[in-house]
Image (tube, rainbow, N blue to C red; front, side, top):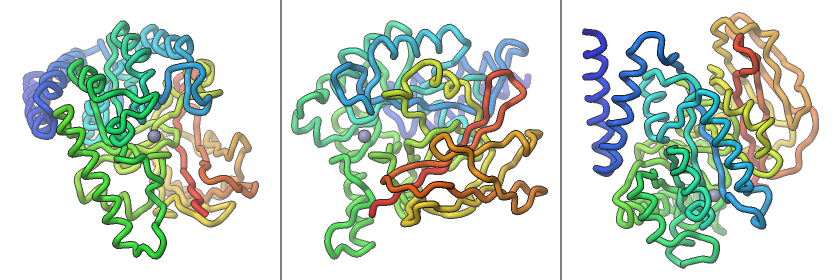
Length: 371
Ligand SMILES: [Zn+2]
């Protein structure tokens, strides 16, 4: 009886989700979700988990900028690894909505995303993902597509992806640095301009594909507390570009994704990320990643759930950080970089080995200095 009640509850939540999605997306999702529910409800078949991982790609090509590219061979190696090692590659909305509503996922749940809308996604990644029968999501900036810019997909190609079940979501109109103010622009005018661009991209995607999920991937992974608050008010989820797994208590206005390009595309390092688990961490200070400091401090509260404090290690560009426990009892940890940073974006990463061999809890704190 409990199984039936669970399925009915899932079906109800699917109806709620479907309200926001196109009909095709809702049907596809309902089907996958009910299959997932049956699997989770059948004891001993799939381990339920409160954690998921979102992967981020741009170009699947050689000859494009290395910092945003993975070669077709390396991309295929990722898909082989996911297929052969008990991963469940889920539609992005299913993974995120499940974690947001604290609905268990299968163990090793992964969603695949692409940003920007480059033509290699349509030409190379799409046929490969169809071959492996894996869903994926595409975050589009609409202006380069409208302008038929070189190396970008056309709307005809985007519609073909959409009709094949690909989730199409928002990456703003012009791929802006959202933190940049125009000369003498007030905070209110700046935020209104960001909101207006967000709405325009969402409306264009809806008109061209029939999809509107209210998912925004921040261009360059850049956001601040005001942008997050605006997004929350409009009922959006926000996706960033700093590493980490997503759990029930993640910040759904700045969800981590693992960028897998350049040296990070190598399977030896990427597979540790595929297998990572959500650290239950609350970022208490600061409330925004924007900083003018070259060694900013972060105050974190770790809900350790049986993980030993001695297992936790934090890094800045591979260099281990000193850990200042403010209150070990309540898991309050202050971290600060050792070396002055001069770049625009960087991050502190905290990990801890899980009891499962080769799997790590993973959390990162992004920093942005727009200067
Ligand atoms: Zn982008």
